[in-house]
Length: 410
Ligand SMILES: Cc1ncc(COP(=O)(O)O)c(C=O)c1O
Image (tube, rainbow, N blue to C red):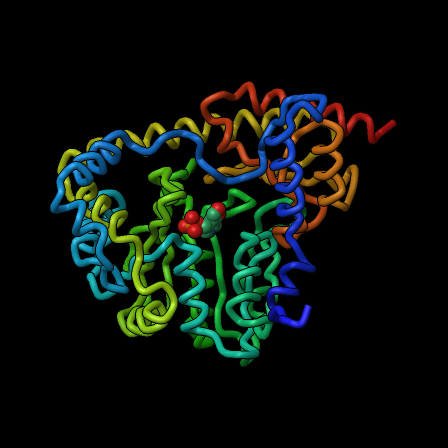
């Protein structure tokens, strides 16, 4: 064809994530379930299946049924976010986490993916180096490739040792050069479900500060914590830190695309300039609904219960799933401390997580996510998020996995 695609588009096409290939088969299953011998058990994606809080729906209905507020919500908003949504977020942070935030420190976005991309553009130049964790959330890499037109280099900080969560800050220091501009960490982690303690997170932050490096902390799963709350969730944000907070998981609204970041006002201003050329503004309708919902007194009673129930439900699913996985001989699990996932070591059977996931899907119709996508092969991620309302699904899935692994031994 005489019309050319960009280098980055060709790269993305030629280097799909393994999950994308697996999703292709899942889509095929959804279209033609009759072609497959068993019902698909989907333990692949990190999507909450339980509904958002009822009060949020009621607020949306109320807003949409008022002509004036409906009309206002259809207009463009300001790029950084509406002042009402900032006031509501300030209240939300104060009431639920005890953190005080100034409005100047906030920017609202179309999900955290949007904001993460914008911060990358504000903080990185061609040739900049970024340190991600191994394992770590797969989309950071893809976003770095796209936003940097393949010009950023990525280094990995191994945070597991002997199949345990042992982030060693000395090893992190060894990766730093004068080109390092950003470190990204996730707590609770995806795919590992681990939670940094205060000492380690603050040590990482000090190292970043000493070297003039931005530290991005992604707390997508902060309201799914199965241990005590580390203090960093409530402490003020330091000048070189970017805290990315999404409503996708905590309010169960991933399809609404709503998130905010907390960072120093100068950086926020820079990101705002970039967003003017990128998205113009977040979804005004979503902002209006959240602003109303999060500024109501009764919301906080509802949310406290909703989050406490959520933790119970997700913790139960985490424990149940991990226990079942442990019953498969040779499988080593990382005990989830929060989030949606059990990450487990399959090296007793194979070092090839992509092949194992392909075979589990082809032969047993169980969909999982291969560790290779999360920068750690020989491991697999099981998401219990789709099964929190019905643990029989995960039970059936792991029973099939057990049969598959038994068949490998023979
Ligand atoms: C760690 C982490 N960060 C960010 C995201 C993306 O979230 P959002 O819906 O806010 O773009 C996800 C989604 O799974 C995630 O797991």
